Length: 349
Image 1 (cartoon, rainbow, N blue to C red):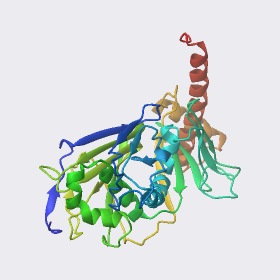
Image 2: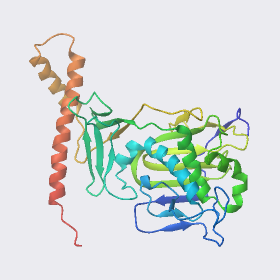
Image 3: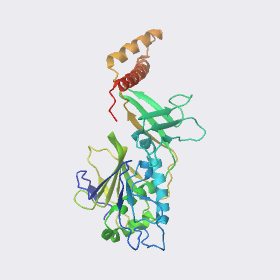
Image 4: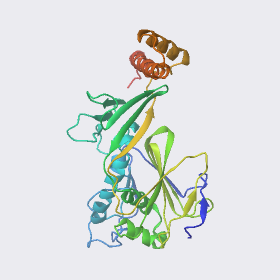
């Protein structure tokens, strides 16, 4: 596969597998218990290796309680958990805003800095998101809330993570699912996922989805028309991640995405650690009504009067009024949403 040739990605290409890992009691197990029991990652058999741990096809941190593999030994499972930690860190904001309960249930909390009272906490059972920005205000600290005319923007720092491990975690999902007879063609990917330093500049792509998927979804592609290589697509919350796996030369394909689908490319040296990265998502709370130009103009006019009718303050007055009117709309919308929820007829259990 030449690294100089550009390949056009067709988002309509048909995947060979679609998986949805929801936090439900239904359990699906991929693979076989043998005998003898076999690990598809290290290719060893029981009793040389043990199979006591649950092997999640998608990470438990993304709400997976339903998809498991019977073909990952405990040693490879331990290695894989390190990759999942980096992936979960990269998806910190999506984990909170998606309201998908983690594998063990309970709240989802994101606190970027220990000792600093700034955090986000989601209560999936109550569909409630609490954001603590602290006494310093919205413009200070690792968790921020910015109001704009369409609602609010939540921004936060994510924990340190290795982009190479995010790419490995995505590739590991494909290796769980691909038929056993195809694994020899992916032997180089197996070695890389297990830690071999083969891909000097791992690459994956991130797109922001217009809505929020309340589960973790996975689509997997083989090489073919519109797909230059094996491809993993992970959909979670408001984020879609894609990783196109390289051939044995580890010269990943140069890709061209449709202009209608803006994509950010993450490509770093294999040993690089991201230590300070901001991520954001726009949120429209229930009951919120967008502020009109007329409402903002009226508020800006009265602010101008109260400020002594000074010249040159029009832009500041408009921006302040836009945020203030939006704040009032948010408060009123939340109150109306709670009132309607309380008055809604309850379904019989």
